Length: 623
Ligand code: GDP
Image (tube, rainbow, N blue to C red; front, side):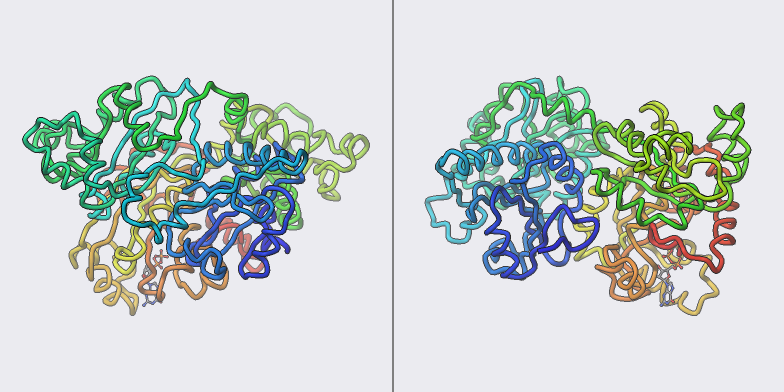
């Protein structure tokens, strides 16, 4: 049972019964990401799992992915769009976690590994659970009142964090707005500690709203709240955790929809509520009520003092790595494999052709050094590969891997270090760079990856069936959604939007298609957003996408080159123009970094250099 590809060597993959049985037969604790074929395993957690694996360094801890579609034992998980993590020990299910909930996953892994060791080393009794999702279908009436989980799954947050309970009500869920609202919640800096989708029974709705029992609307409220699924969220605030209850109430706006629309048009209720009864979201009124509501929805939820693990979590940091042109051409894959194996997550990557002026700016603190001219030359003879690497203690760890910066010393004192191994005959400077400190890392990362905005569009072919999936992927890839609007383009708008293609034979088809139904227009923000979003989309033609970038959105979702599901601006300049065209607003980000004032020149130089050598295969192609 071998890992499928480089990126997933951490996880053994099971796509048939035989491989599944091998996983079950593995000694120790195995954490299985159960996924659907159409969306693949959950990429968002890989770095977390890798980090936990490195920290625990335990031979008894294993990770796997399992395709629900092709394994009979996982039949009940087919068609579920949220990732599910099943924990197996001795071939038996010992815990289950729904959703990519990082703190909960981490806690579960640590706890369950300890439990499994107890079982193995001290003949302890293994606590086997039944995942309630597995038995949902067989649930008989009358059992529904047991809304708390019976699988021993408990959620623990540090007592230092305050929390509130939020409900996305049946009206918003029925209108298909749950994911959109959840993205907005996360973008506003709320952390989701727990999440559950559930239809309240009338009795539960009555109990939940008992404090409104005397109000005229009570019966209507009970009917409404039990009319369909709600999403229940436990929220805390990422930064300032002291005022989450108030912050959430502020964010959702007044309960009265007219008032919300008048006074707080940006609030969730103003945007998603239709009348005061159907006001889309709920929030606990104060900390006491939050406590009661938490106990109501998640009876197993408990609070615990902050642990050492939380402190460690905070040490996760980024560093900038540069692979200079010669080595980038010759040894890129080998170096990337080293990086990958060392537990780094490659969070940003970019190939850049620097001008001498830019190289000088980047290394301006080295101007006085003897080797400065050689360094400038080395940096500008072809595209540099820039990487932002993430893990705990990233700066120091990468420095250790690099070894001494003086090549002669590197070779003599530490011949196994990367600088010694990947040097270039005839080039006196080392071929790999790493930031010296976290402050320098942050400066250097923004030099190569400035925060940008781009226009992203979910085109008419994808709005109905793939909208939620695409929004989730946007979130997982770390983009912030600054604006989101569903719009039906007029012919005039569509023509204007694609005016650069007006001479193309497919222009009229393209305009027809873009007016054939609503599109979701978004402003996305992230470091290096323009390229990052184009990489996520993949090449224009889905056939090419399937062949070269099978994980990209177009490879997975687009039916043909015309109806290719998503759009993304092709350059920063286009992004500014398109955002202005669609939303009538400036990007709000002035990017003054040397790299980008000169974007066109850079791209041209890079193309010339690539000429008939090779095309960058880091990201989706430029076009
Ligand atoms: P994009 O930046 O990747 O969207 O690609 P372009 O700007 O080159 O093209 C704009 C849009 O025109 C594409 O997204 C497709 O919807 C459509 N398109 C591009 N090339 C073709 C083609 O060869 N045939 C057809 N029918 N449509 C195309």
